[in-house]
Image (cartoon, rainbow, N blue to C red; front, side):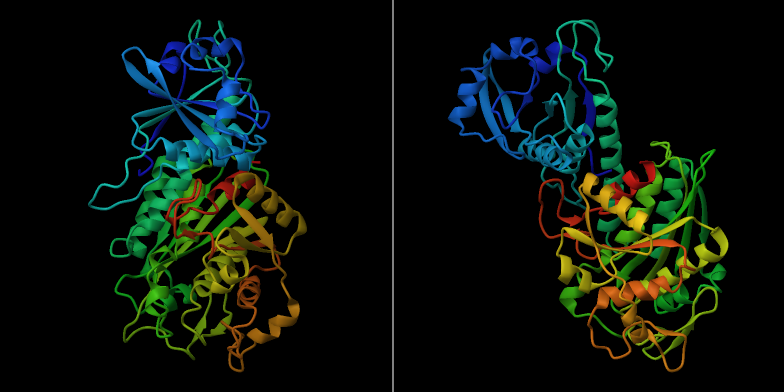
Length: 501
């Protein structure tokens, strides 16, 4: 696992005081956010009072501010990090945690004294996700080796965190929140691993094998359909027929006792996308090992459901194929038969994601009887043009579902923007020879994200459904707060919050 940083929880006051690198929080009122009594041992090492230090650094208390302070430690030098917490809301503490982890890169350990209030899960997510690295065959920048979270360090008593006598302790719920944040970070890192793996390794069969391994580790039921079992899945077969690596359909199942609803997650699992005979430009193709980011988000989300005791039944479907070029590849003007019998005229082979997703959605509607269906995919460049690289497009047929997903995205640091399902555009998908065309038959390129969503809606059977087009935020060109360059794992945090909340 490329998140090699190990989160632990401080249970020994001396271990905190004498840690290699200790981070102390301060707020916008420029006071260190720890109780005065708990700072007694630390104060002896500060060269001047905390207020004077913060004034010297012209601190504002904003999230992401970090000031490094050398202090005498016997015959050597120790270091404090003073970090701003902003308003202590999720976004602020996520940014604060990430700033600390990046500042501590290359260090053996970092002890983070947590604020007295705020979203501790977000603090842990930010700190751990910022340590993520992915390299093959060479060493990268070393992340901080261990991140230790310390509570208010109250003098005496065991504290909520279960520390020994005279040790530190967390306020009610803080340690549980930190552990939740660590679990979310590890699930997100799993998605990043899958996304960042080169397509020379990441065939549809390989991705299915990883899903099966996750199922075994997480107590999930799993079924993998190979090319011999995909006869009715015409979209998956058509997209994958040009590749030497045959397609797969992954089905993961989480079924807790007393589940109050059944949610189906559908992820796009295109392990590499050349565009097919509708060939992409070279520059556009370079990032296409990440075109299965939606499928990775589904697998990673499923991996954490048991740990969170999610109260709903969840089925995860990942439609895996490689969209390649060969003499057997599908052609523009081909007509395919999707699961359930609907026929589709393929006008553009680079609009392949919707074809594999349509099969999975139609199968879920016909065979799984879900209460809610949510699909997630790097579906259209149009969504990226509209919303950039930090916000995903949300389409939904259910107002309540849309509201819950928007709230989960905001709380989890993965923002969504509600987009319209414009029914007037539905006729653009009419075909002269089939039930549907896979793109606007005028090939105008207008409203590409909307027409893609309208295409998918045709296969949902009128059920409560949401579509997340993550083409922008699924990839990052550079490190930024908890986001690291490459696959971001977008969708895992918001889906876990939605399913467990």
